[in-house]
Image 1 (tube, rainbow, N blue to C red):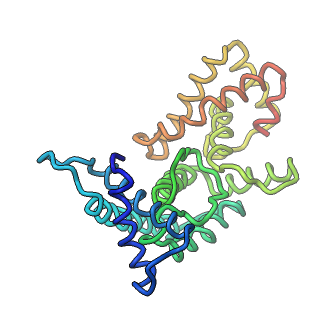
Image 2 (cartoon, one colour; image 1 turned 135 degrees about the horizontal axis):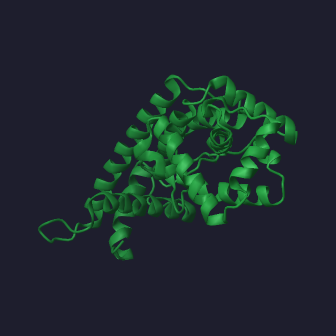
Image 3 (cartoon, rainbow, N blue to C red; image 1 turned 90 degrees about the vertical axis):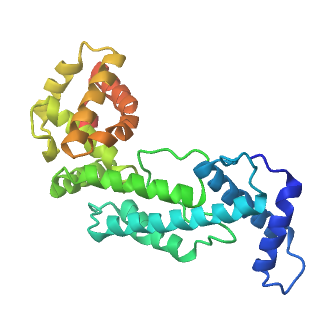
Length: 277
């Protein structure tokens, strides 16, 4: 952002007037920081969408950039709500409490309390359920919108497995470790699906038997770590395409390296059953 402090202060003062309904000429230091953060957030939103200098070459004034950015934030909030409505129209939590609580419990609180005008940089909820995606330096509606889009993509992938199979896989995992599952469901299901493909079972079943572990070990036994990673990536692509996510399969490639490390060391130390059973 190329605006100087003296350009931002009048915009913040204008916002402070709205915040106090013109009943006070001053706000606390904490509220002033909050309002300056709101101004900066909206301007950065505008710059991300349209840039700072229009075709004519005139630099957009800070107040104009703020109002345009505010409109962008409103629009993204509406789009996030549309994603959420699609997601929850036929939502399946597979018995994962953390997943359910975040999507059907926490997210409505965001839409109820999100303050687009005075605190758009605050996303309010903690998003305890982890996705495959990463959100470095994201906050406010930017974070929520991207998170919801990722959850929607992941729900489409999960729908290519039998619902009962995902539920049973989750039950076995929680039973093995003795604690509620707090990690990502796609990560759990995709790894099991890769094992099923190698063992020549339908990947949608997510069911492996003890005698399949030897077959999986033999398949990866001579592979280097890069080769295991290449194979894992190919299987992730295959499963994503089967789910109708060919154009979005790259998103799930975030898991490729993690899978390769786990499979490589599991094969080397003969503990693959800890991964696949």
